[in-house]
Structure formats: C-alpha cells, structure tokens
Image 1: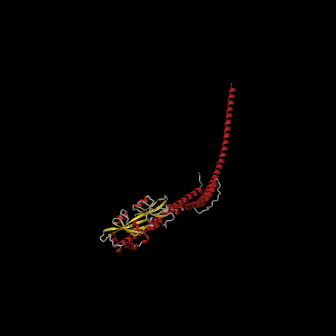
Image 2: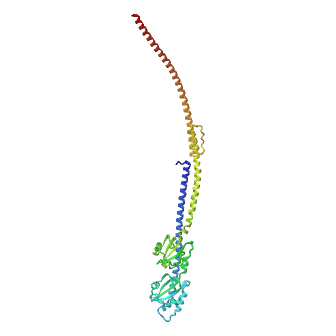
Image 3: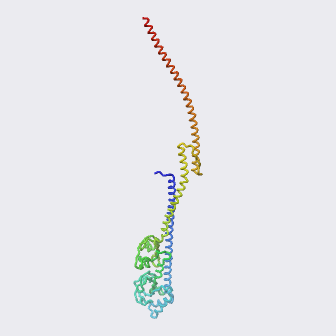
Length: 421
C-alpha cells in the first residue's frame, strides 16, 4: 500500500504526539496513585496512633488512679485491716473511702477487695461479695503486679468490660489480696466507632490475641466478642509487628488498612478504608485522561494536516512544474513561496532549470552548426558523386568504343585473309 507524503507526515505526528500524551498520562496516573496510597497510609497511621495513644493514656490514667487510690495512706491502712480480718474495721467505710477517692468514677462499674484465697470480702456491688475468683486470670496476675484484663462480656451488667487488678500489700511487702476494678468500655467502643477522617467506608476496631473482635464493626452489627478475624497482617500485628496492608477485609471488600499493636490492652488496633472509596479520586481521573488523549488526538490530527499541507503543497507545486519540464515545457515559471528548505529546493530547481535551458540552447546551436556542416559535406559529396558518375560513364563509353574498334579490326583481318586466298 502506497502512502502519500501528507499521510506519512500526519501519521508520524499522530504517533509522536499520542505516544507522548499516553506516556505523560500514565506517569501522572501512577504518580497520583502512588501519592494517594501514601496519603491513605499516612492518614490511617495517624488515626491509629491518635486512637491508640488515647487508649494507652486512658488506661494508664485508670491504672494510676486505682494504684493511687488503694495506696493512699488512709485507704491502704483500712484495706489492710479488712484483709487481716480486723473486726473493728468498718467495711462500708472502706468502700466509701475507695469510692470517694476514685477520680474516673464515670467509667466505674464496680470494685472489689479479694483476699489471698480469691474470695471477695468487700464490694460496692453487694451481689459480688462472697464469690470466689481464685481461678480468674486478673486475680492470679493481680497478686503479682498491676494488670489489665481486656474486654470480656459481663453477664451481670450485660456489658463488655475490662478489669484492672493491683496487689494489696502490708507494710512488710507481703501480698494480702487484690483490689479489682471493672471499667465500662463504651467510651472505647465509641472511640473506635468514630469514623472522623476515614470517610464513608472507613472504620477502626480492636482484635484481641484470640483473634476475637472486641469492638463494634461497621459492616456487621453485634460482632463484638462474637466474630473472629484471621488475616496474615492481623496475625503479624498480634505478634507485635505493626504493618500496612492492602487486601480483602473481614467482609470480603478490598481495603487499605493499618494494623497497630497496642500493648496496654494486648490487642491489635485496625484502621481501614475501602479501596473503592480511597482510590475514587484516582479512578475518576481515568475518563478525564481518556478525554484528554482524545482531544490531543484530534488536535494532533488537525495540526498534522496543517503541517503536512504547509510542506506538501509547495512540494506538489514543484513536482507539477518538474513534470511539465519533463514533458518539454522549458518556459515554466518557478518562484520560491517559502523561506525554508522547500524554498531553497525551489531556488535550486529554478537555477537547475535555467542551466538546463542554457544547455538546451547550446545544444540546439551545436545541432544547427553540425547540421549545416553536414549539409555542406553532403553537397560536396553529391558533387563528387556526379563527377564520379560522369567519369565512370566516359570510361564505360571508351571501353565500348575500344571493344567496337577491336571487333572492327578483327573483321578487317578476317577480310584480308579471305582476299589473300
């Protein structure tokens, strides 16, 4: 298939411009995608750290409040007497002192004093007194050091609670029992449910070391303490390795996430947002980029046509005049229209045509001169031929006369011989 120069120029410009537009669009798209992913990861990290730090500060404050309360001079002496079985100790007075000294009373559900056998000897919840908690982990660990036992469902209060337990020691440092406080976790759940900065699909929630979700989930109601999540990144987080991830979440939706280990509650804090929402600014850019490429295509086509015409039209004019010269028309007028390479070529062609005219004129003059000389030579040759023919005829006549003379002599000799006889 033969392509004209105009089409070749248009195709070349189209390919060059479109390739550049596509490459720039892809670079811009991937740059924006990378920046968006980094921005999302930074946002999830920031939100995770803000909420994680709030949780840490909240429980550190709660622990400090409990330790300060139980170790205050007035309260500590009364609690020690109670645990040692002093009959003069007023249990109600001890409970009142503990209640009045609690700073974070709004989150308090109940508190109890347990002896070394795990029996609750005093509690602001009378239903708890006399119960044995020797097998509870908060009691076992609470005899050694202050400990926090994360989110469990309390059947009595029908709430998700956590328990902080701290040892009660006498002046000699001997452990006499445990002071345990149950704290409401609704504020923590509210904090996790707050989606500020996370958009419509974003959320934060907590997963404990048993892979159990311990706060509410946005996409599944009533999942707290009922749903387990096993994802590689959450497994890694529960191994105390915080990490970012991009995979399908607990609901099967592709999502960006950040899993952060919160040591105070021995849980993993997950902050996540759906991929579709997070990448919507980037994905919505695709139609615009396609429109941009189409516009560039049309502009390149139009520009290519104009450029091709500015180059091809003078060349076509020059070609047409060259064809006329080829057919013998030496009177073609050639005037350069452009001050560029095409114009230079027109000038060169004009100079070549002028030289061709001179050469043609010189050739005609030489042909005329040679023709004249040839005609003169022909005339001379014609004269020579006439003379030759004339001389040839004379010689032929002479030979004929000689033949006749010889024949006559022969006849005379024969006659003479005949007379002699």
